[in-house]
Length: 235
Image (cartoon, rainbow, N blue to C red; front, side, top):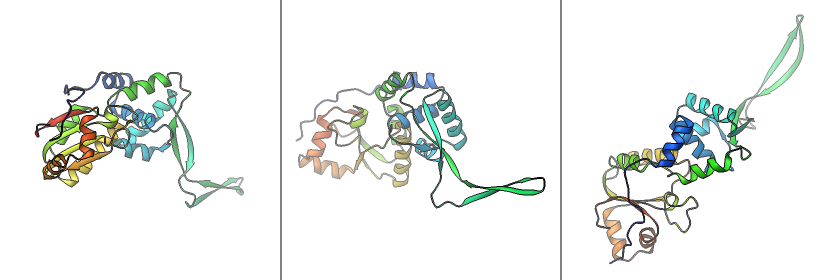
């Protein structure tokens, strides 16, 4: 039998203090999602369309929140041509009944990126990275509708921002899991976290077999820092 080490933390079923502070400071969960997206992907740049898709918020909310963050100095922006192959419109000015200059107009999108020169950048980055990537209470609530869930273990980025020595961020053991619901669950989870979540989904039989075979992957997940949210397998 595997020697399962005790979990390092216990689930309290509440939103973390850091998350509460973030939502109070930035007024809405939409801004918090966008902040996590930009601060967990500091080298990336996002158009409004890309940001709203990653954060899973509507276009108008995304446009408003991004502009507010830009005006506050947290983000910077520039206009980027949508595609090198996109058609270019021509605009001709008319004066005194005569055609004047013809100007080529490329279709562009506003593109946003984090501003490392923001006066409170280090403090804001520390607050975001110290907060849990996602609310554990919401994870439990959402995950119950996926199927017959037996075990949910958080590790990796949920324990350390740098994922040091982690094999996965999320281990789920369950049966009759709806593929469609699971895909939607992961989209929402990654939108809340602001980054890609590495996950492992096993059936009860697969988990039992791996456990019996002293599987190294399971040992690494369970013996390293983790938090168990659902446990119906006596782990």
